[in-house]
Amino acid sequence: VFLTKPEIFIAAWLTTIVAMFADWYRRRQTLRTFLREAAVVKATAFAAPLLAFGLLASALPVGEAIKGICGGWIYVFQEELTSLQFYAVGRGTDDLALSCTKILEWLGWYLAFVIPGIGLAWLLGKPGGGGRRRPDWLNPTLAVVLALSPLVIPTLPYVVSIRPVLVFTLTIALVLWIKFRRHRDQRSMQGLVLCALALGLLPKIFLNVRFVHYGFGLAFPATLLSVVALLYWIPRDLNRRGWAGGVFRGLGVGMLLMIFFGCLQFVDKWIGDKKLVTGGEHEQFRSRNTELSAPADFAIRWLLKNTKPTDTVVVLPEGISINYFARRINPTGQINFMPPEIIMYGESQVLARLQAQAPDYCLVVHRETSEYDLPLFGTDYGTSIMSWVGQNYRAVHLLGAEPLHKDRLKDGLAGMLIMRKR
Image 1 (tube, rainbow, N blue to C red):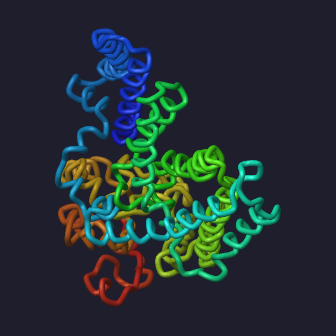
Image 2: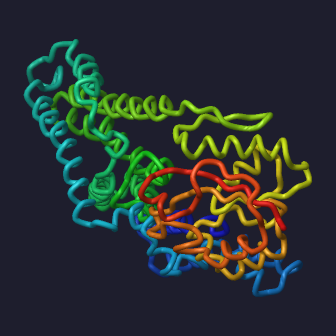
Image 3: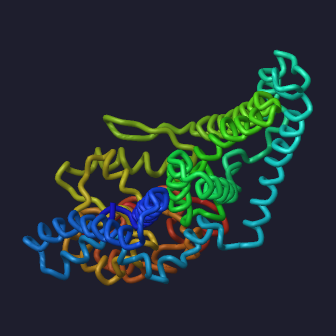
């Protein structure tokens, strides 16, 4: 895992430490035993990186081999990269007050279900538990009514409905720790380990947790824990008290279905807006941004018609899919020329690679990058690269508005310039 992505490794490392500590605590062993076992486990964890280093060092200089096994770790502490607006927005740290407010808003929505649900469970009681017997039709009715709520409240942004999942996970971890300290049971220990994995994956999005973007993977364990708590742990504890845990579970199922159908509406609209079909001879895809996709579709067809299969193409600052659909090689090995890549690899090195493997064609696409707080390639970043392209390539076709011009920030138009090596 160390050889892949830092954020996944941190989660795996934290999970391993918590698992080992909890197991040591449960077995009531000495601290010396724990330290010895931890040292063995962590030492053996170095086996894969060391093997990778040996293999890389057999073909590369030692410095390059070290950089190879470090991968993304080289850039984790690169402030110029990590401080980009794109990552700040992803974490929710661009506006702390707004992020916390949104978390509290969604927390209020959930409490509006949970508190009345617990009250209803107490009021109706559990069959055989001494309380009033609830009607048999109540649980499915509650679930269906709540599931249909998106038809009544369609404006809620359900794709960010898991904003408070960090609060839920911390609460679950605290409850499990109290139970674990009291009983030292294996089930509570396993729950704590899953909490460690869930919390370890959240730092990249911790104040802006959502189902979309990075959230589809990073928020999954925390969401799973929340669902288990809603549908199993809380109803089980209510039943043990003699209350109607099934009623609470019915509310929980309805709430989850409400979120599910709300997200389904979002996906339906997102896909429904993709009306333009674009692609090459073998594959096609649908797009919703017609101003950007129409030039891309034209570029693919133009390359298929006017260039040889052996001609090479680079798309600036982004558009590797054009290479794929047109079956034209990008000789530089540089997938795109966006702000993170320019910062990571260095503009001078990217330019040197471009000069060493100069493509036959350069396609300049209008791709606004305001999400990084650097709106235009060639103006706000990548200036030396764009200057070199202008000196060594001539325009052969312009489609739409002139790309990467400052006027595009105002008029919202898009376009593409196809350039051929002089």
